[in-house]
Length: 612
Image (cartoon, rainbow, N blue to C red; front, side, top):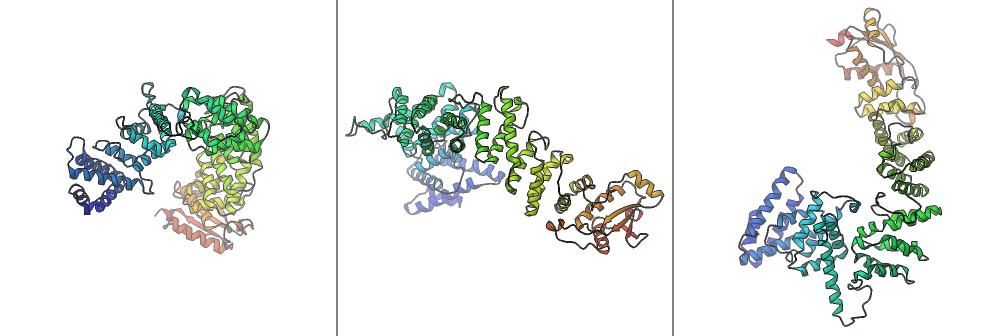
């Protein structure tokens, strides 16, 4: 198919055009869909080599080749219109060495490639120093070099007119990630787009009567901030016109302090701000307005207007408390702004979001120097108040098993203890109980594994002893015998069904080799899984004392009614328990020797036979 595609492209005739486009589209999409790393590493250079040989800048382009170029470009248009999330940015890399000019690339392809890059712009990038070797920075350079040609500004203007907000975000990102010497390249392009728009408007019959919504409006940079303030303050507020004006600005021209003052003076300033941000489609403009949003949110919290405070919180976009400013002067430090957001979420009954923010800025640490946000000594008392507020919310949490699971997973992962700074012992107990009752067993075991991994088994407590048994059974079913043994050993005194002398020492086994067999009691209510744990542990002990014998004594015990809520009932007769023991022993140790004990209710494991 590749050979046919190349042949149809180079030896072109009218009847093959549709077929050629189809072949090239298939070839390009196949390259972009490659998932196997080895295949991908080979296919990318292959496509690059094909394009370079066919349409390289050093090759002469004949009439047939020109038609071939058109086929490839039409294929790019087809690929960019597919609904798949294909990495077409790679096509830009392949095609930069060809004879294709910026104007030849299909508009849909250019817009799709730029959008893919803009969608990858990281949260709060304006407050971060971007490494020049970062792949996103490199892509912005390649896209600008490929699609924005100084000799063909009409082609670039076509992209801008198709999606001004997207192109503005792209060029702003380019400028903000470059060194000072090249910082204004993106802005110079934006100025040229606006100038050409202004000239087009001036050439119309309505010159001098330009409507604010037309492209040439606000081109007078010296008056731009004043115009924005007037738009915010005027009685007939038009948010879409304000958004167009903001989009016409460079980011460093948007004075958020003055904008906050203008919204504050308006009688319905908060409502106007909410409309503006809700209708704005530029992430960068919304991020720039975070100062205004958080200033109003701080004021509303002072007035304890919680519902409106949370509405404002939801309008924050990629907020960075280390750079955002509170012009209301209610909050003085970045840490106090984080506490503000947590407080708003708690009062809006958004506990999960509050804990997410608490976790994001590493506030589990009592030492404020370890927080991921700047603070002052005065913030320490505010931190203690926030801890108290979150604790109250956790203690009053209704029995929502999945929400509790997510909260616990987040908190346990960041605390070194169940007790500080947040006491989650009660929540852990109720959550595991609820998860097991609702048969959401995987999440319950997930929490238990975090307990093991954090080394917090010594703090692990459940009010219902039956739950320890259920967890042991589930661990065995997941083939995690080591954790099952540790859990049984740890809580053998809290679970009446478990043998008390489960963990006898090797010295005791040594004495049993010289005298009678060591006696070990098993209650008949134990399940197959629990018996398997006991045998597994006994075999580990016996391996250290080859000449030891253990006498297993079975004692009648009924299954607790509470256990029947979690697992299927078992036959609790002594005979059934002995049979379960024999079956599990043979499964674990096929050559194990069993001898009748001194009574009908006992068996002796002959270690000598076991070793044969």
